[in-house]
Length: 495
Ligand SMILES: Cc1cc2nc3c(=O)[nH]c(=O)nc-3n(C[C@H](O)[C@H](O)[C@H](O)COP(=O)(O)OP(=O)(O)OC[C@H]3O[C@@H](n4cnc5c(N)ncnc54)[C@H](O)[C@@H]3O)c2cc1C
Image (cartoon, rainbow, N blue to C red; front, side, top):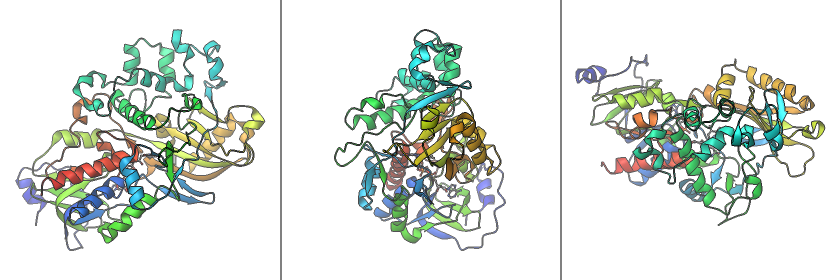
């Protein structure tokens, strides 16, 4: 049996030992122990089982799926995490087919957007001549709510999905603010970009990380017919979809019954190999094998371990190794995580008909964006979402539990008095406050792609790394599946 003493005797460098309970369970054994039952861990498990290996999958939560979560509300199922499946999601689509899940074209077209900036409503069409517009030259024509995205798209030098990791683009491992300064943008343009910057914020995310996402998104768009005119970037996000079917798929698809149907089906096939309510607190590695210890004292020994949990939570797991890996520790400890908090609401009556303002809007204020979803009649009830990302979401997360929803509704009514009494909360989810996630998605700070972005997916002794944050080529759910496949192949090559 491996003990902490023998590990330290061989020169291991562990972080301060966690106060884990004494072992109360007999150690179980498997070829591979996988930590985390999100899509990456589940896909790895299904592939390794197909290769004839025994697998145990440990999940901290009382449900599987991780960032794929469907909440049942009085208004029906709502995906509070991933929901959109693109045409180029080969592995996700294959899994949906294998598990006989039905896809439908996403019915979440957004009604037109306006901007509420510096306390005033601005019309993008007349922004050029608006006295509030202090940008200069060609900048003046850029829709103020899209400044960050517009600059990001304009300077993207990447043509292929793997180029973000190519050292020839190392000089772009900088922030959006640095990119704008390098290219002579005015301070006013930089200020506008700071509230619509993709990633965490204008200073916090590397351009290479932003361009990885954007370049991969381009593949999805190229996989279908040219976008309709309405899609010409006057919406910050989730514009009207192209509902034409190509090979039975729309540009954006949802799973009937909710996205969580996919991890549930994968988990059901894996059966009792998936253990819920097993939060991993420590991983001990010798080079020949590994032992994983959960906070309830249960223990699993295996030849290989796959960490399929975000680095935001892996940094809370004690990792003891007979050979340290300072660069990987740095990646685990310092990779920043973005946040998304969303309030899902029902609008009883289209209040935008009362106040004559655009139904959806983006603001430099504390609630980020309001997305009004087209119900295709223009009358009666509509679904809507308040979407907070980046620094706006971080600020909301600092509020006391339960305060955010009331604050957001009050802020909405302050900006749109006509909305008073017409907003009904369906559900609320803040991914930073979820203790098993601590964020909605990985980021890489300026300088981190060059520091460890190219190596962070490499195995460390018997520990392999899956999860969307270890993506090389893909994005979203597809990147989680990509990483599950990669780790399964890494292990298959070693046995
Ligand atoms: C709001 C939101 C919207 C999104 N929308 C889309 C979309 O429309 N389309 C798309 O393709 N992608 C979308 N994504 C991204 C997508 O959800 C993720 O890329 C993907 O689900 C990540 O899967 P994963 O396996 O890497 O990690 P996760 O899903 O995070 O799985 C990790 C698992 O590890 C568990 N865990 C954590 N700590 C421990 C521990 N110590 N011990 C054991 N288990 C632990 C967690 O409970 C979790 O189940 C969205 C994400 C969010 C947050």
